[in-house]
Length: 362
Ligand code: NAD
Image 1 (cartoon, rainbow, N blue to C red):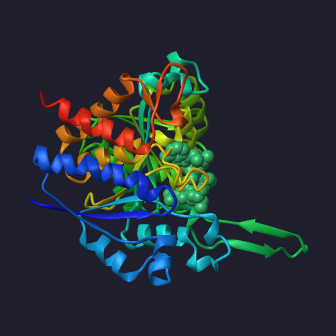
Image 2 (tube, protein in one colour; image 1 turned 45 degrees about the horizontal axis):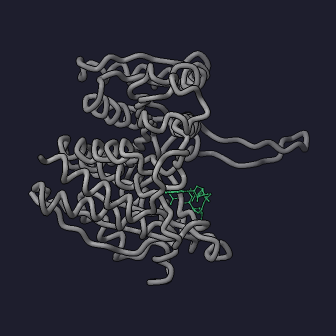
């Protein structure tokens, strides 16, 4: 089967880092048998420039018809004065919801070569490899009713609703178990079941789904303890699954354990494994056009795509190992640079990964 990929470079450094990821895909296609067709479309500020809206119809149609989407980043200061509906970020929210991407996979992966970049002690984080599976389309961020109202005593109160239905919990649990099956087969479900009824139901449903995944070792942890354990001993975790709100907070904390935003990929999946893959960082307007951006988060997003949407584990590992080899050689973009290493730009880093992929053939 030939996979169809929609490529959405976006704004700022987006096109620069996506170009390097495409080089990686080109070599996998030309030399390692990856059957892939790619088509590019505009999103974010680029969508606004091209078609007057951040998510042009033809971009959405291309993404809907594709097996996976590779996104760079959107946004930039020149778009900040636009009406809210026309801002680049709207394109991102729009495509996520139109594609029904409810499962957000955020790895916190620290190559041992970069351990000194973390604010934590190297021995606590070196070799860290956690995957946080965050529910992305439900929970308190979307629950109704919500608002700010006046009480009878004249004081105002703000209110939101935390609600998860059984099917919503079940599908994120299945996504997390399936993810754990592709890794070390340990899943920690994070909740607040000692206080919240929603969490009680969450725990019950996750337990029930676990019967279908007997090879995965399931544990439960309260979110306050999980936050503590993430900074105390993060290597105890393989996959963590949690709600939208808890996942938002924990995945940012886990990302910072690694010390570099330029290294972290992400995936957002629908119920059939179709996914959108993107680096977690933004469009970095401060370095856009300077050739300094780190393309590795985007290249590692390609590895996630090969693993989670295309089920091509060997190719995914080839890309990840190539990144490791390049770091072993001491090549660093400025965001991960330390004394004694060789400073390179975006294009040289991409070339080095491509070369390492080819070298591993022999
Ligand atoms: P940012 O992630 O773009 O940049 C934060 C800092 O990290 C900057 O100093 C930047 O130079 C650096 N950085 C980011 N990616 C890098 C890379 N690959 N290599 C080297 N350095 C890198 O966040 P910001 O500055 O808060 O936001 C800039 C724009 O990006 C805004 O318009 C924001 O709305 C948008 N944004 C988009 C996304 C997305 O597309 N998913 C996410 C976050 C922010």
